[in-house]
Image (cartoon, rainbow, N blue to C red):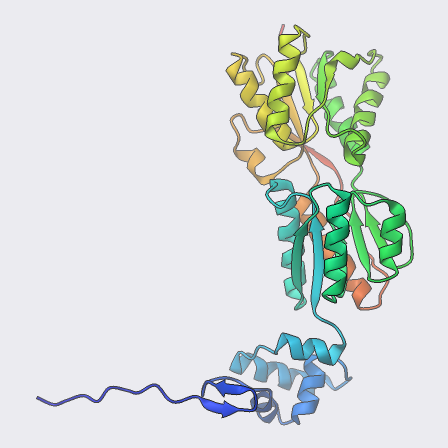
Length: 354
């Protein structure tokens, strides 16, 4: 019987920094294929030199041929950057922040940047810890996807590193702020319910002194005033932006025998909890009670019933924040704007019964 010799794995080639597999691609190989020096290829890759389109295309073709991936650390060193962006959110487990971070990561990766995610949990001390940690690590910029820090603190940090903050309007050197029009979004939600004939509309609020919650409450009150309906504080119940808060709000209203035909929730997660509590109380949505949320999370399309919600595309907001920080890091004045508010009507709202 003819014996087959087993194919031995080729030994690694010894390099200056240790073993390197025989099939690894080097910058020299890319440069040789493109017909330029390694230093020129490096400068073309890092965009630190102006060359003809023909030469740049030759290098890009060589990169594609060998599937070459430049060393991020070396590229960052050449550019004087770490190629990292710090991202501070408030609750990583939240679907809202999850969608925002997905948008940030998607846009940063397109430009060769890596995000470093941290969570502040709506605690000022935690956010300060995150800021100091990210600055110590030398990130090129920081995105705060909403923030509990004061305006003064943000301005002070902006003197150390470029900052983009969402959820507020603030002007300062080295800082760009982006804010969705929460008050207008609340007006849109309330007008929808009012047009359906609802007059006893409960509002499940958010944390006290939370900027988004305050603006949405202001929009709720403004819509009532425009419709000539007196504001009833008994219809406003504190929530916590989570499902549990929505459930407790429904129980509180019903246990106190406070009548209402519709409920405007501070966000979609609150609305999810409210719908579950109504179900457990034997109420049908929207036949007995209409429910509307805010944010239009991806999962809102697949609830039972599908949730009517005010859409602020959280993923697009994240992408806009990432685009703004990239422009700042490149030394340009950011030219971005958040996506407009719009109402998405689904099966959780209907005309008032009777």
